[in-house]
Amino acid sequence: MSEVKKEKADKSLSEAAPVKKKKKMKSFLFRVTRDLSVIGAFIAAFIVFCNVATYYGSENYIYENADKIPYNEYCVLLGTSKTLNGRENIYFTDRMDAAALLYHKGKVKYIIVSGAVHQNTAYDGPEDMTRALLARRIPADRIIKDNCGYRTLDSMYRACDVFGVKKFTVVSQYFHIARAIYVARHLDLDVIGFAADHGKVRFFSLRDRLREYMAKVKMMLDLYLLNTKPRVPIKKHPAPAAG
Image (cartoon, rainbow, N blue to C red; front, side):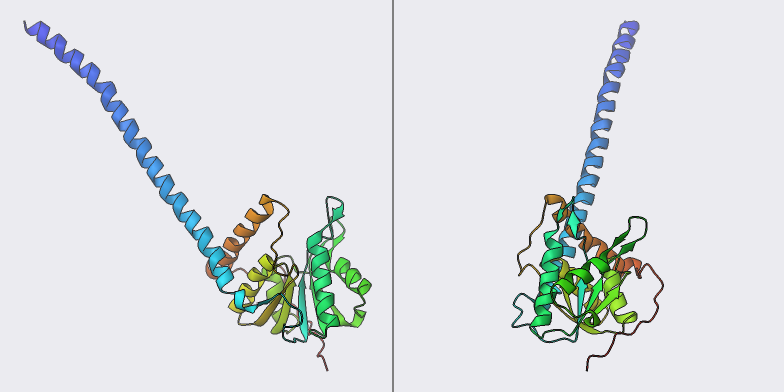
């Protein structure tokens, strides 16, 4: 009789072991899923916060009408590639047109073309912008080159620290100048922006949109956590004073 009971007990234990193992596995998967969901929700909320904060911190300084924008001696024209996959880059064309429009309407006197020069690819952004502005009847002596505008943050820092300009108009697409103005205001610069696309946010693809969302997150980290500075050493090149 005792042997029968022992067999039943052993059978119960052998049946209970897989059940306990399954319960532990379910509990583990639940904790992992829960933790990942919390982390994902936090990241999503942080991305939304960075983008909303950027727009709220800059929207009052962005103009879409060249006739209504206040006068500034200097304009910082943010660079982008002239072509994309061998085709015209609308972002580039719009920015050049916008900067030329401000100049010809008497809203700015000097234009700082801030872009990157890459020796390995023979790409010279400021040179492309200079040629485009000259073609739009901007005098050469009114164009100032910044060859180290690798990032928006670099362009804003260098306008002040390299060229000594603390008050200026920044030109780019609406979604981009929102970020530029936020950086400039963080640096206590007196900056306004002119939307090269007249406020119409035109993205080429979902990838461009997502990249801009993440760029604002990176901007916040650079400003408030990483204390990021321009990539190249700062050398003073004071901009000419507009008489």
